[in-house]
Amino acid sequence: MRILTTAGMVIGMAFSSAFANSPPLDPQRQNELVRLVRQDCGSCHGMELRGGLGPALTPQTLRDKPASSLVSTILHGRPGTPMPPWKNFLSESEADWIVDNLQKGFPDAR
Amino acid sequence: MLLVLALGVLSGCASPNLRGTGDLGVVVERATGSVQIVDTTHRTSLARVDGLGDLSHASISYSRDARYAYVFGRDGGLTRVDLLTQRIDRRIIQGGNSIGGAISADGRLVAVANYEPGGVKVFDAGTLALVADIPAVGSNGKRSKVVGLVDAPGQRFVFSLYDAGEIWVADMHDPSQPVLRKFTGIGKEPYDGMITSDGRHYAAGLFGEDGVALLDLWNLDAGVARVLVEFGRHGEKLPVYKMPHLEGWASTGSQIVLPAVGKHEVIIADQNSWKEVARIPVAGQVVFAVARPGGREVWLNFAFPNNDTVQVLDLPTRRIVQTLTPGKGVLHIEFSPRGEQVWLSLRDENRVEIYDPDSFARIGTLPVESPSGIFFTVRAHRTGL
Image (cartoon, rainbow over all chains, first blue to last red; front, top):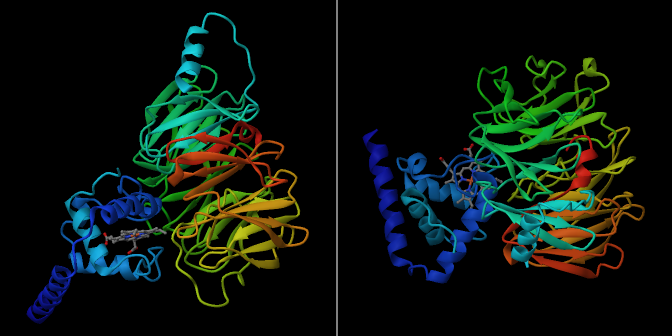
């Protein structure tokens, strides 16, 4: 258990330092991501992200889940479920920005 | 323009302003919770109706007199819009998270399929009072999301349980006492269902397994058969960025055109034997395959990232005869009742475009905020819608 926790922390730290090194997203790309999440993720998770075929992606449902595993779900999908991988369209830092905002409460389009 | 027309209607209340509804329709504005009422004769918008809640995955059924549109919203809203007075006639919040609905053969019952809490609720089409509640508890004892709800001949509703992998037939002859017939173990994750144009077969597409679950509504005792198993078996599965919609499965009478799941191709199957006839490579993961009335051509749109493209499949030659790129975010395709116009909703361009399906020339364009589904009143008289 303890070993697992430590490993998780190390991975978590590796992730956050990777993000710290990547340049912040410019506002235009942020707008594109808001649109992508509400429209294209929204086709399964709902435009309000309150769930559909896929689960709700609200702060209440995501707050206690580790960000790194959510980032990995977005980039690589969940094989055997309809959740597709987005790595061809999103960089790691973009997926991290999405998870961060989903956990805080996702901004509205426009 | 909209305002002037709306005012005209308001002030016109006193004088009789008679018109039919056969050339009308509704376009959903998915981001603003509104719809526009459109006219296919003049290719114009007549009015905008606001206040319909979350319409991010809205669908519509029509009353049998084609005057009222029942709008099923994602927030569980069920709204009856009067196309003639261009106003909300009634509105209720019926459930948590709905995905679609259907109207009974006699026009007296409106059924709504809910994801959350999973089940079907049936309402009086006139008053929107609840008449029956059918929780979708599968044989695994768990509540399941409901998809692919259609009406079927014989005052029945048919739907699929996504999580449980079941198809249920609800006989509504006594509306408050639905008689259920449940088919279990029909396959993993039915993601949508449709009824063939003759009203005989209910088909559910499977996401978690290969093939299609098929129920012959003339012979329920025969149970659910698995057909087109070979479909999806070859090669690598590609990611699906939007689930296909089967309501659009083009059933042309003798042939049926189905989007493959995780493949950039459509399958043409024989509608009697349900055997594959051909497999046609297309521009992406198909979302809607819509047959032009007359059934010669099938228009296709695609999931992200190919959602700027529309292709036209000619059935006799089995060739893609046209590829159009009308704009970003093509969400839906709807033909006028006799197929001389086709309307496309372009979500990211905030407009609806109208094409002549013979010449492929653009013959009209309407400003519509984030348009998704387009629903013409001809649907009022089609089984399954």
